Length: 184
Image 1 (cartoon, helix red, strand yellow):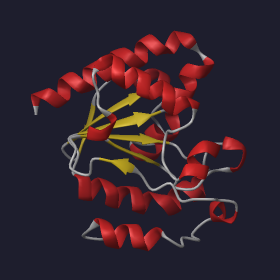
Image 2 (cartoon, rainbow, N blue to C red; image 1 turned 180 degrees about the horizontal axis):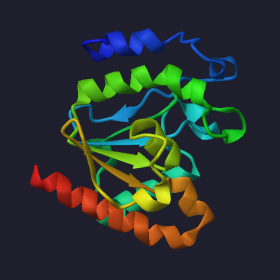
Image 3 (cartoon, rainbow, N blue to C red; image 1 turned 135 degrees about the horizontal axis):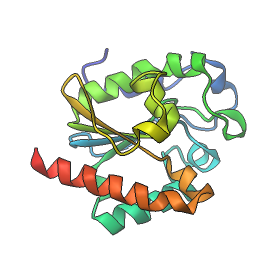
Image 4 (tube, rainbow, N blue to C red; image 1 turned 45 degrees about the vertical axis):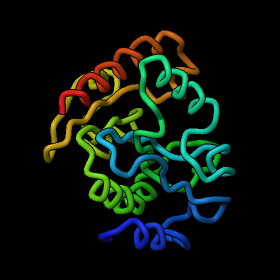
């Protein structure tokens, strides 16, 4: 574990822990307010994220930004990261060994941020953080508490692009998250 952001970010610069490093353009470490109450965790970077080195800047990220704007979440006031820091080929889900190699970086980000709320975007984030027994359809919109952190699983923004019916659930979840963050 690293005690500061500079050491943590330097530790990942030339990461070759898994095969995802072979095709990456950029490591997508994370972005946002490092002193936030709310942290969002997705699965992994897509093509736009790999090109820019920032999470959630493609179509799914743009949709997420619109939802944030609608409910009153300022993206600059939260922190966003992913389970893996390099793009899986063809935007596939990260494989178990890839996620395992990257999770220490994410855990260290959580330790440094000390969020009160972690939003798990989709099943990959949910199962890698809370456990393989959790399913996104059954868990979405429910609070889980682990080590004094409140977790809210919700749809991944990419799922909203595929299924318009999930947008209302996503908005409701964001509103619950925002309301909960105001209590602390």
